[in-house]
Image 1 (cartoon, one colour):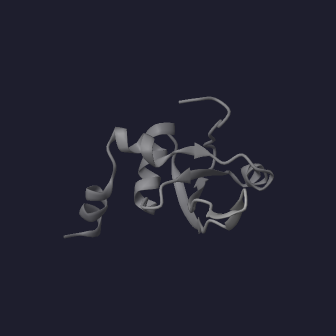
Image 2 (image 1 turned 90 degrees about the horizontal axis):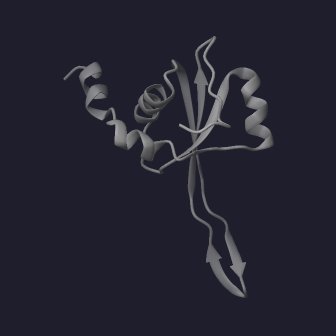
Length: 108
């Protein structure tokens, strides 16, 4: 099985694309990345880079050149005297091709 066929098998359908791209991350650091043509999204923990790339290209009709992902473990915190744990999150920093852009302030 060639690498191209393996990636084709991983690509999500339209419904899964909406599940993969959960929400944009709007923080000071992520807005600074927009100067370098990068956009940050929250994604599920089980999402792979080829799936994220296909979902962004399908939903926003842009060309993705690179994807960086990071997993952030949830902190252990106290809630009303009881020990609890915040959820683990995964973020994807998507680098877009020159000339492409995504306006995250508008909906899909």
